[in-house]
Length: 112
Length: 112
Image 1: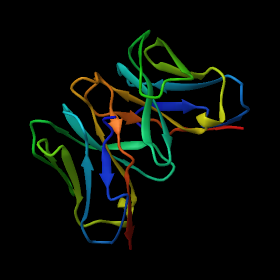
Image 2: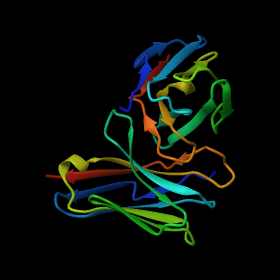
Image 3: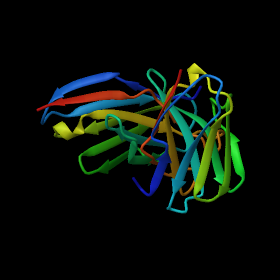
């Protein structure tokens, strides 16, 4: 999967707890993205990064924060998980912001 | 929203037949991409077509783009059972920076 991993792959947590998902790449790509995928909605962008410590919001950023302290790692944090954040989360990387994206295997998050 | 919309939502064909799926979008774009997603996996990039291109081929895939109608089509020729997957179009936007908008996908089933 183009040198991109996500951890954990599955997580079950309770409402109100903080959750951090990690995306790690070995491709040295500049751009990294976090998406969520829900039935009937396709993939929706949560946040993305265009360099170390450079991030921007996507269309569904409320309730999420991100950090990128190294080129290879992009963290997604749910500050206080809610049941509406139950979803499959995908990380993606891209050399530039206009070219193809390479996707990780996904993290299935369930918030009870 | 600039989200692309695929049509049909689901498509079932016999092996060897051609499969055509369409994508419509709302605002001007720099490029449009098609991705495939096998069940339980991340998305895989298939093809990118730029706004100044009208047609592009890659193996058994043929993509067309009509910017005047804000639409694209993906044709898979001589389909195989292994083509069974969901197919998504993704569009950027002239004013959306490096964000991509994915449609809700077409679920293709190829019957052996």
